[in-house]
Image (cartoon, rainbow, N blue to C red; front, side):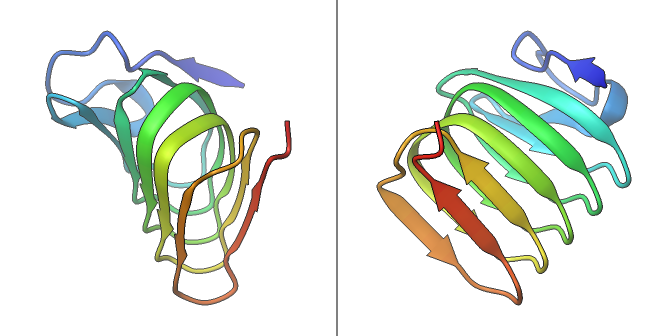
Length: 113
């Protein structure tokens, strides 16, 4: 598995599709990868890629999944999880207070830890 540490990135793209969209938001846009993303302690995360297997460590403030056919496991999401793509499966170890699922065939499981 590839390990990507995105918490220390200041700007631009880093290997495997992780970049900083703004000061507090990480962006992931790769396709067909297996990777670990470090959300640190409170960064927001936008995922737009497809056919990825991702492990997200740390605690994300909020997450938006707009890609398709991703398998994603999170340590923790503090506020909101929005899934708008299709065919995504998301597992979150903690209970998530804000869950919004649209698109087709998306699944979110919270409190899995």
